[in-house]
Length: 147
Image (tube, rainbow, N blue to C red; front, side, top):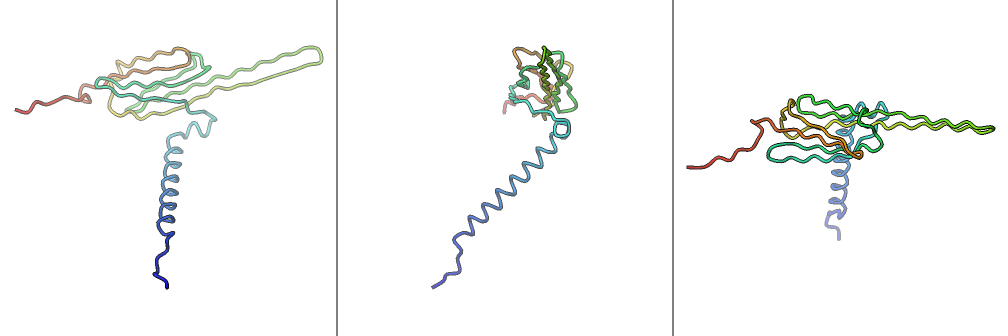
């Protein structure tokens, strides 16, 4: 006796939905990192915290000197870019060693609100970059008392 019910319908539907979601996530990542993809940059680990008064972005940039960090704020996007190339060469009698290392990071971060670009402060300590961006007055949350 057949009831015409395929017990795997729900499973196949779930697999199709997961494939659709994974495809859209991959497309989104590729849109966000065109420079990184084409130039061999790595994406730094980043934390984004929003308080009532500011947005704080913390990025891990291990092994990068402060002088090699480039920060740009355009509209509502923070761009972090670094580039560093090192080359070590050792030559002894009958022995030669040459090593190259690049530390390139790139990340574009869309901020959760408008910030005051004239008051942005950045600090760098032990490979950790911290960017503090005060919110624009109109972006701050104001409580309204009901009368």
